[in-house]
Amino acid sequence: MPYTLNPARTNFKRGSTPGLTQAAKQGPQRRQMSTKKDRLFAQPLQDVPKFTFDGQVAAVFPDMIKRSVPGYSTILHMIGQMAERYARPGTVCYDLGCSLGASLLAMRGNIHCSDVNIIGVDNSEEMLERCRQIVASQPGNVPVELKAADITEVSLEPASICVLNFTLQFIAKHERAALLDKIARALVSGGVLILSEKLSFEDTEHDALMTDLHHDFKRMQGYSDLEIAQKREAIEHILVPESLEIHRQRLLNAGFRSANIWFQCFNFASIIAFR
Ligand SMILES: C[S@@+](CC[C@H](N)C(=O)[O-])C[C@H]1O[C@@H](n2cnc3c(N)ncnc32)[C@H](O)[C@@H]1O
Image (cartoon, rainbow, N blue to C red; front, side, top):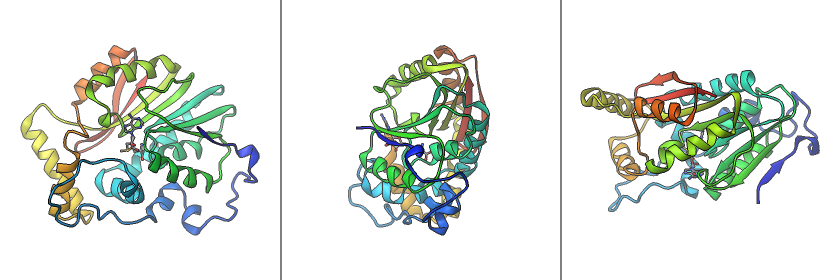
């Protein structure tokens, strides 16, 4: 069953933070940073299991994504900034593959127009359970609905913003075009898709350099060589990156009138695509 948090039924007032911890008052990213440290791949594993978004990952996810994706916090802030600009009355703002709700909370904190709903969708119950708690613990005037569903199957209402923040890379390659076609059909004229992805590069030398620099970044964030190697093995064939050219062409084929990079750090990038 979808979960709806209707601010009209809460006592939250704009700007007030009743009953919140200091971390919660500091905003979604700061609050999520206070969760457990990611040590999932710190010990040698005989057989490295395939990566899934299960309860163990959900428990450490804010720490994991922040220390694994260069620029993640910046991207979240800018998603909020873009939500302020592009959210339209009478539409939905989607966070597809919402995990713990970081992107939808960034949108909620910055949308000032009325008659907008935010819908977060994820197919990991463990992620959604934590997401519900986080969303409920924070004030906000925009209604948030959380749906446990596969984003390739869920039907979309007319939308002004769709966010796929590091989610498309986990969808089977052969299902990606149909998903983007569906998003393009749902977006109103002038609506935007924000698509953040790990990229691959056709130039093999550049691809190797970007991979090396990313691993250096992870080392600087405190991950050991063992953690980096085991995580890489676990996520191989689960997270399947594609090149910027392939993403852009697929977006244009889906009916987006433009698709351009607005952020990149090494092999992590975010595209803004307009209907
Ligand atoms: C890297 S996380 C996304 C991070 C999140 N968007 C953020 O900004 O913090 C990918 C998420 O996509 C979800 N996911 C993967 N495949 C999915 C699918 N087919 N349908 C719905 N959710 C999916 C996973 O459960 C996971 O929570």
